[in-house]
View 1 (cartoon, rainbow, N blue to C red):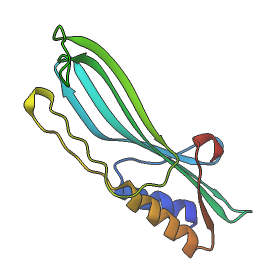
View 2: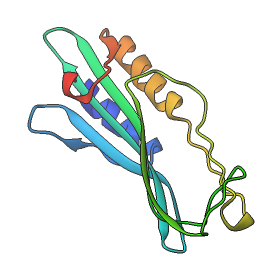
View 3: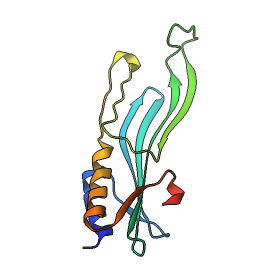
Length: 147
């Protein structure tokens, strides 16, 4: 089994599946958390891309967490005066940085706590270990285009 297949097999521990790209890399996008409430929706997505460069004996790796949401808000917070309803759209990205631990998010929407966790560092470290064991250099890239 070659290194690309090994990494693709390891991805079965992550809620997503790698798709081969035209440029020879492999890309995965997986929704790891989603919350729907009255006229609003929030979603956290893990995006990962890697390329095995055989001549250079290198694995280039990119990962990103993307949080997006849209919908009607329930009014102002932190002491703000509000009419009670408003429309809000927001996105948040964490690009190409090695981070470890888990992602935790909590919301007080309608007085309920929502939480989840996903350990993305474990997957990246497994890919690093597989690459180094096979004699390849592992490099994290800051942008998806540089993979």
